[in-house]
Image (cartoon, rainbow, N blue to C red; front, side):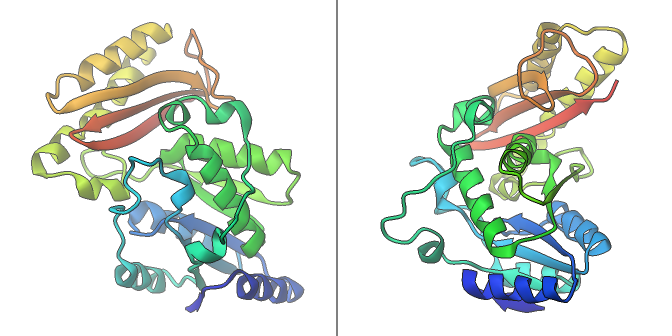
Length: 281
């Protein structure tokens, strides 16, 4: 496993790999790796000659009162896990190199940035789109691998790739969950033991929603109402949003139909967690 720290070195490596007719799979992360990240690495390894993992905690996607400074980091453990999964390259760009003094250019990705998490976190997806674009420019992959847990992020990236006509495949892989259903996330480490138990309510509420839909209820208002009711049974839970939207456009839907995304963001104590399911029928 090789470590690359500069954009120019990364571009040179990728250029040589492509000259040798090698395909490149790319897994962008903010580190503190867990099984969700590892599932992306494994898929990339299966589908490509070379797998590149980036680790970069992106300041541009954190608001002024958010958790950039305390976001969990464990470089040694990340490298152990990456090596075990036979990652070919870890790309560690620095903040100074990615956002040098006087940096001005950001990507405006339109309406998909201003709903769901984007409504709660103004500027977040501008920061996400910008860093992903910069990383793609450095890695020049054939395919990029993202997790369904961050559904809106995956939709934003896919739309950006389509709109900018990049010759790149975006793969969105299923959520990896703990035994009680909680979606794996680096931020789960913030939870104390009591909060950790309460956090299971996110997935429990989505399972209830799925059961109601299967029984015949298709009105989004009723589904949202039931999800909120399940969540609020937990005294430490506070709802940011619960929404039923089109899984491609993120537009709100009055009725549940195939490819409807049911998404929620919930505060458990001070920790904001997200989850979602897609209704397939």
